[in-house]
View (spheres, rainbow, N blue to C red):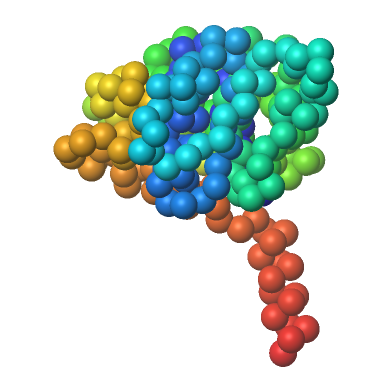
Amino acid sequence: MARIAVLNGKGGCGKSTVATNLAGWYALNHIPVALMDYDPQGSTSAWLKNRPSFGPPIYGVEAYKPARSTMTRSWQLRVPPETRRVITDTPASLDNPGILKFVSQVDTILIPVQPSAPDIHAVTRFIERLLVVGKVRRLNIRVGVLANRVKLNLAVYRGLLRFLTVLEFPLIAQFRDSHAYLEAMSQGLSVFELEGEHAETDREQWRKLVTWIDAPTTEERRHDSSQLQSIA
């Protein structure tokens, strides 16, 4: 089971859009997926409630709600045993204990960022907190950044790209500023489930993202190599 968190200390960067469309991608590709909603706004939970019955199933957990008196917190957060991907939508304005909580639960962190100077400044500070407070390198957690709501080109991201290059964190994908995402969100669909060709130009970027997420880690590659050598 791979656990993926969509994180950013700043609100309005598109975390819920990334989480829901990524869940939709896995569901369409017949990979059992669960969507954990820790954001008090409940955007991903609302998306799931709007999801039509004909869509591929996605298991949802309203993790932002307190557990009922008859239920333990661990029972509330359970996912079906066949689940292969758990995607977590997180709240904005995380304090240091909040960062530690989510970092301790995941294998991969995705950070969406919008093309504005305040957003880019905020995300560089947030990445520094992930390194210092969350100790993501020590825990071997992969961190990737997503350019969200891109209109024309990546010129505005030059400073961020230099910062990421120094840290050896990749800019994985660029998602257009497309009305299709709003349309899909309101219908409980991913952009891949909309009728017509809304998502044709976006599919390649999502394919890049999923390929990066699902690529084996260095440790897994070493394990596979040693297994092959022992067989030989």
